Length: 312
Image (cartoon, rainbow, N blue to C red; front, side, top):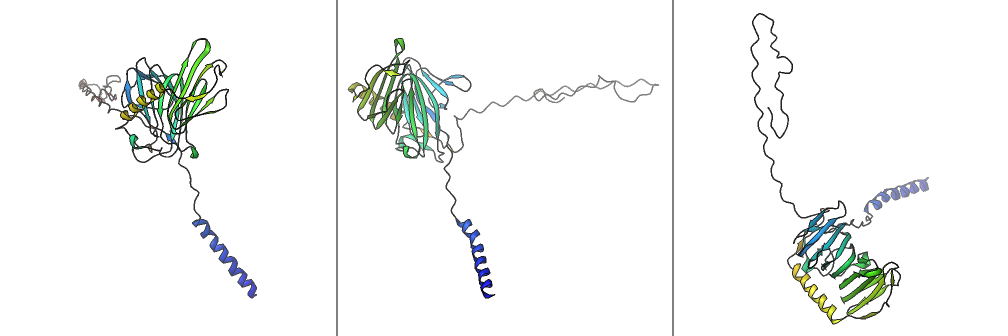
């Protein structure tokens, strides 16, 4: 009998402790869902068009305009635009370039970001650009690739994966399906992955120059990593300095509110509707007949309910 009592007490103690243990167990951490990143046209020179893939509408970009993913950027001859991304990346898009912003998402950040102060991206991000022709110089702060960040620039003959780098990409379609491709790394490292070749590392101070047959995706010249030319390194330096100047005073607002755009101007207040005219007084019925004081149907002044014209 004593053994049964002791057993019951022991089981009760275990049952009483189990819920407490379950309540005090730490909850598994959940990574915040990525949101749409913010992109600002930090400096626009000449005619630069932004075409929305969602509705096909075209607008001319100006300094300070917001740009979203799923937008095609087209620079006219002699034009250029510096796009500043809220993960600390910037690209200087040269003249005669078609650049698509296919995707840009990142972790939410609660504080406003001063781009010139960023040395590493806040959280993680995913950036996918594609260039069908033209030239750009990019300056990307250190990305947390080990936690899933990625930044790629796709061309018809291959993609350049950026790891936190200052780089230049040139892609020029030529006659008879030929194309000229060049990627130069001024700082950091670029991983070039061609459509039919194994990935090629392009470290700082190096470049890859290849001519391709676009129809097959095959290089018609050897894929060789060589020393970057003095001319290209000088071009990258000039473009990088322009980027630094353009973003010196650029601050990007917190993206915890979700998608964003530039703050729109306040719409003008609609004009007050005019007051409807007062209905005319009905005539007095003739003497003798029975008068129920109800005007004949159709003579009652109709009440105006239009918000623009006012109420009668």
